Image 1 (cartoon, rainbow, N blue to C red):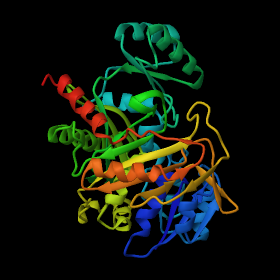
Image 2 (image 1 turned 30 degrees about the horizontal axis):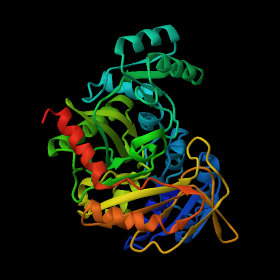
Image 3 (image 1 turned 135 degrees about the horizontal axis):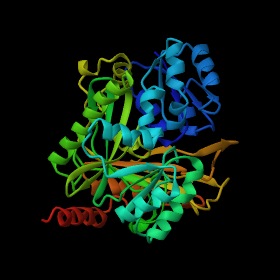
Length: 434
């Protein structure tokens, strides 16, 4: 089978690596805006092109007799790439534009949840008028402010160290009005986690729960990033969650898929990412994404025991209920090395040298290759993943690997450390009144 992966980041490197493991020995092709050396090494051929150039991507897919496409990032989905490929008779294991709105239009997504009585929807409203917005911020008190459109995981700000008071919240919210509508919602209190699922329009096959670390610096301080690293426990459930938390979250995602079809007349096919906050009242939806998380893809795809090509084909054809999707019950820790100064003032064009990373898995992200050397672009550079029987062992593998990668780089050494996980457990015990 000829398979095309669109995108050139760490998430897409993980997708390509999972396809490459298939017993079906597929021929892999890629479209990416910059040459990712990890993806390039696993491909028959690749096109260097903007992933949002729908016409060029479709033209390339047709020219290479592509039978199945996976779209990694959100931006191509938002401009209808899946629709255009399917119009050419090419199967796509990623959602069409109408249902991908769930990610790229936060205002639409919240209104959709409210209209369809989807559980876990926080108190919110959507604004284009400053005065009404200010009044709502005053009314809620503790708020989260979200631009309605795509921001690469960096546009959301919450009360606390990011927005120290109501005045700061109003000022930030007002600054976003130029870009369109602004979502103002209650600032949820609890612990964040990610639940992802393969979806074929009706059936969902769930992956292990993962916790991402958005903040740039140790101890969860500093600005939000695209994600500095993530971990999952051996088995399906994170240490601070209960089985009931996960079952409730799965139900929310099942209800969302059903309601999407009812609302749009279109089936959602592809990976669905649910970002949840576990609160004293159970799971609340922070957001949905219409694709894998980055870094969370790098935690779960190495654990996939089923043939990923079978899973992709089943998503595209609506036959996910015919296969048994299995993950190994191992723990993983993923840590990103990012350019110094990331995200606010990152260094660029600095060489990255990968030494002996031991048993860790390496995923290249936003880098480029020139004369056989790898350089940073200003965004997240390389990720390493440790896989083991416990989080503690996986963390050691990842940390040892990071220490053997050199360059003008920064990373968080605390991700996956037992003291940070214990802090989450204690936090949730306090919230639950235990």
